[in-house]
Length: 108
Image (tube, rainbow, N blue to C red; front, side, top):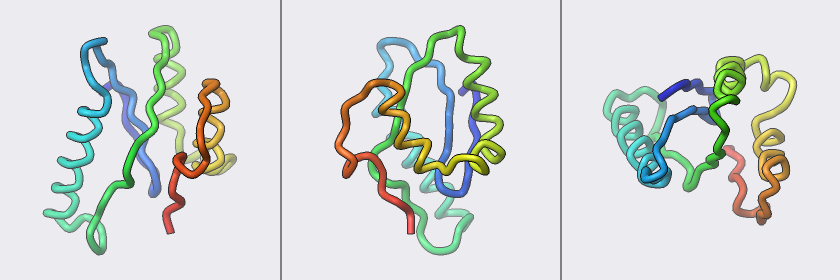
């Protein structure tokens, strides 16, 4: 884990991985272990659960300092641009075709 920061409706993590490592397996472990900890310790009202899916993007080693700063400054950043607006812009920035219905479920 190189950097982690959370907002009320999302979390950003910068993780160094090897080519043989599987992002889906890593996210399954993170989500299941954190859900158990949050619910066992009653860290939020009601039962906590993650949404299905996740967004993952790769960056070159030279970009790591910029990505770390970006993650550290989430609170200030989201005062200018909402998480959903930003999240919807990522596939365009990375030239990824997508169907909007699979992109994100707005938390109520």
